Length: 321
DNA sequence: AAAAGACCCAACCGCCAAAGT
DNA sequence: GACTTTGGCGGTTGGGTCTTT
Image (cartoon, rainbow, N blue to C red):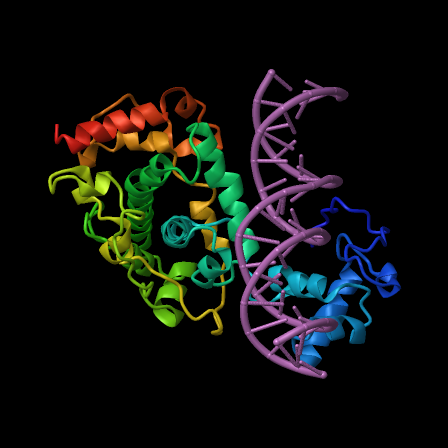
């Protein structure tokens, strides 16, 4: 169990809601094991919903909201814990470009992940990198960087990971580096891993509703010639299809999350600096960098990866140099 | 080893819409 | 139709943990 103690004192009975004296008795702050068990047991017998009365009937000195949040974000049996995988990262980026901060909507496509978790991920990881790039996370620069640099790189890494898994996994495996492998097939090659399970039993490939390419959701890069990088990497509306991107559906099924194999992808969010090594895609070759260590302390990325670099790079690409 | 700063994330807040009375 | 309750959402907070100095 997570022994983390929350910021608010457990003994604080100060009510957050401004109403009556009834709430003077309410607990706030971290949940105890006893409270968790009480809530779990009650829901097991009576089901969820009607959270305020549930809290009362269960004898929990908590608001209904608090019970609901605790259940949905932590206690639900299908809540998935552990690091966000590469595929999930890709999905989050993709879906965020479509829906913005609609965390709950995004979470629907990542079964077991809560909106809170995705929101936290976005804030702690993605926004951090926007900050590093000295641009706003909602700016066009940053969005384009995500679409045309990070996301393709993520796909590449997913493919690489699956290729590596397939070579280690099978005796007569396919030659590494097949450029047509998709993340879905990639996952299918890693027998007995989480993705295999997901793709083969419960989830369907992308059914994200198509998004019309409007001035808002398209970019200058997307309007470049067919020979440009933008043409090599499809606009985001086609992104999932292009890469056969798995969109997890139907979170109410009996999925059986297996977190153990995720370590292969742990904390591997790709650095923007990685794209300078993107030789196979026609990127100008720049100095080598420990690009994949973005989150692992790749200090060098800060020094040369900035918006100016990105745009000069894209200018080159757009000009089809 | 200790201090400082950065990071992570559980939990809370306020707002809103839908449902109920 | 007005009011109240409930549930859900996105935004924010702040304390524990981790990393760096």
